[in-house]
Length: 349
Image (cartoon, rainbow, N blue to C red; front, side, top):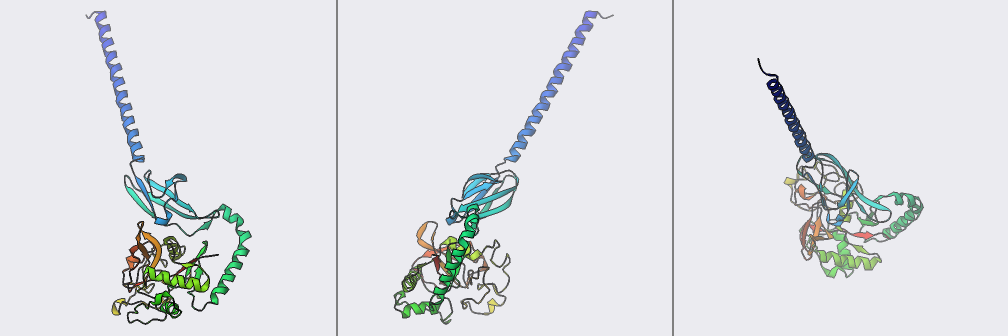
């Protein structure tokens, strides 16, 4: 028969084993929960990056994600996996802002680039408050400007851009308009080569940025109005005409929407040439050939290097990928090319 004190010792040893074994299992369990929590936290902030990129004129715009201000464009932002609401906003003046808003789907541990194109200026809260008071004055000014322009037979037709303070040429400058300058002793007497396609309503070509400035100087002096080339931002607002699609007529190239290599179903059967201005349908603002026909000079500098000025819009001998409203090309101000012209802009009084 076993002695009582030996039985008590064995009971104590068994109890100690159960006690320490239970604590060890609890420890393992809590370590498991900690690992799961850490893993879950890393999944939320797994270095997914939303890379917000703006056009040159829009650098410095305010960037917000899900309603929270994050900084100024361009900007890299750490975001969780899933859908986030991006808003980029730049103040134009006390009454209007240019805004980009879009829901963005971000996958796990990726860099998601978003090329931001701010829309045309829209009234902010202050603008909406004062709009009724200014509308009558604005309409009167527009009618007065329209009457004065109609009296000028050699002036390119201009179109005011909604929600902005500028207007832009309805068409690119034509040979007829250029020849009027030369006939009046302007444009340094330069007669651009016509490439055997005729003059008249064909867009003027073989004009450098410097040549365009000589035309602008003559026209401004002749009319008493301050004409100029559009900035890149102005050109882009005018070209998009409030749309957000690949082209101002939609996301598909389609047929006969512009003059480019491949824009027309029978283009391969004809010689690559310009067409008379207004041959294709206008964009929603009533502007013709904003994409295609001829490249258009702007006042933008190529990547901050003003030795090269920016061209926009593509041309008759370039493929459709060059026709998007955000594509940029840059060349020297003295270049004269047979697919390069320009259109005018003017700040409204």
